[in-house]
Length: 291
Ligand SMILES: CC(C)(COP(=O)(O)OP(=O)(O)OC[C@H]1O[C@@H](n2cnc3c(N)ncnc32)[C@H](O)[C@@H]1OP(=O)(O)O)[C@@H](O)C(=O)NCCC(=O)NCCS
Image (cartoon, rainbow, N blue to C red; front, side, top):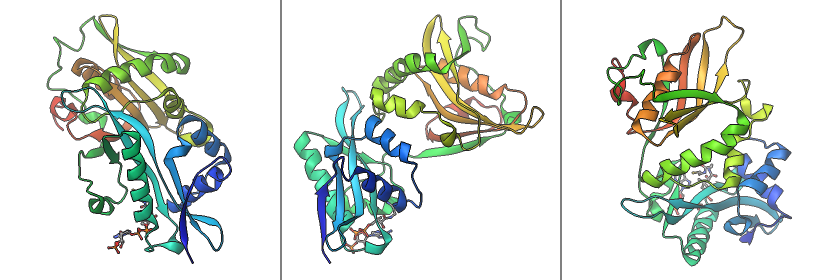
């Protein structure tokens, strides 16, 4: 048996995507294959490892293009390595290592100056000289411990600071500008293309996993939009102490960050707030009076 690396094209994209999700123990909805193809991936950055005997894809890999903000400078082009899997039937035969080498060579040729990834198994990547850059945390917050000891503005009732709900259509227009401002000033953050935004805001029933459609709220400081949150509610009936699931909370200023968390912590009928992938230096810890 030989394993050969081959390009990914529109002809084998569907097989490639199914193999990626199988590698993580999931099936994939056919519409989500199309969505990923249209909104996110660049075919010429993907690679398939094929068993030449069966002619089937047994390994997958690739990179997404990003601009990464680095200390004191303009954003630099980054290869965001992703989709790395080898089928359990073909493990430990070098498919993953060969695909990583292929992806790195291609990234160098394109002019990417850095390569980054989100490691599901962190010990895999040291051999390719990757190191840890940042930790993130998944939070579960009991709002009854949500009192602030301080607020980074004169006071939380400052008339110039307000958080308002907006609809999904308005969110599509408003959120990218706030995100871009955060990205430009935040080391380690990456940009988002318009396709990536459509991917991010996709809100069909099947992605909600039983929770509500997305809600959106935006913070304004003296009329300028400086932060946002998207979230879902998970609750059974009007009197249930439900869970508020933060999908994304982004702020371009400390005031917006505080105002949005004050807004989230002040809901009635919420027994728990969850937020995934929060940065390890998030200042919410330091605002709470009893963290
Ligand atoms: C991780 C994975 C891609 C490795 O694929 P593979 O084709 O078997 O890897 P390779 O044969 O190229 O192995 C490369 C090296 O990494 C080591 N390695 C691979 N997977 C490992 C694991 N899970 N734990 C420890 N070492 C591992 C191998 O022993 C090999 O080292 P060696 O050359 O010194 O023997 C595959 O096991 C997989 O698909 N896992 C599930 C999905 C996943 O976790 N993907 C990573 C997402 S970040």
